[in-house]
Length: 318
Image 1 (cartoon, rainbow, N blue to C red):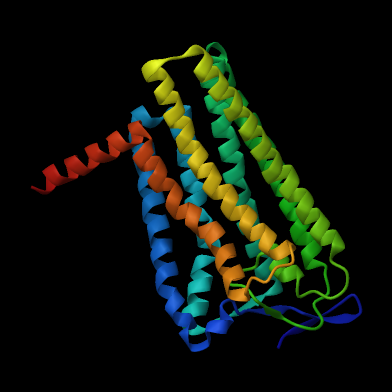
Image 2: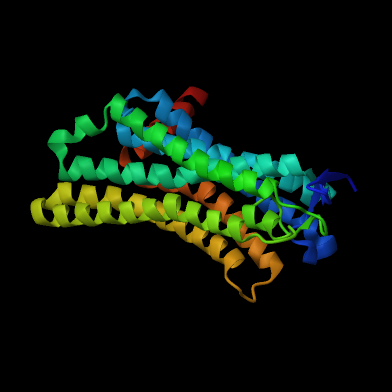
């Protein structure tokens, strides 16, 4: 067991990720469902990105945002699923402290953009439906760059502080993490000494990123629905509601998954370690599989382009 010397105490520099250890010899069977989900996420998101980039008619702000969400959903599982699959199949459970912290940073940093893009989608719909005359002003390149820079700085600073604080903790007793990847509280829970600051900063990050975004999204959609029912009727009203409902479905799945995983680690409960790890894994993996399918099916412009490509492929083959 590799050990280093930190702050006058021996501290582990290598950890073992032993998620689903209660399954023992049957643990390897989980390789198949998780591998299938990873493949579905990769294929579905890649196809969505390809369709949006290849078709000029899909270069509207909303479709570009759906493409950005697909990029997040495509890249997020890459940071933890391959390592998890190797661990399940070959029991390659070891990871260095540095590797653990790097993985933690990218999982939480990339994951935080799910919330940021959902907020951007809500603001885009608000501008399009409630203040259409100023829509171009809010969706021009300058405004988009400001939003991107603000999101990168906000998310990046919070996640970097969380990772640095976790990296400075002493890990003197156990180097066994009951998880399949380096989630923040999973690593912090095996540290020695007080972790109050780590938990507080983690809660602060959740509030300043996820909770604030969620509140802004709810307010935006509230104003949208009030505006739609007051001013529009018939087809335009149904189209606006349909578009917003698609985003609300994705938002509910994303936030419900995230909050469930968050509370299973921070609130005392009788949930078994296996279920806790499953919830935490699915909160990252399930939306990555679910989002591109929902956007592909429910967004009319994207659905039509996908069907055209399928028909064209069939014609070429014959």
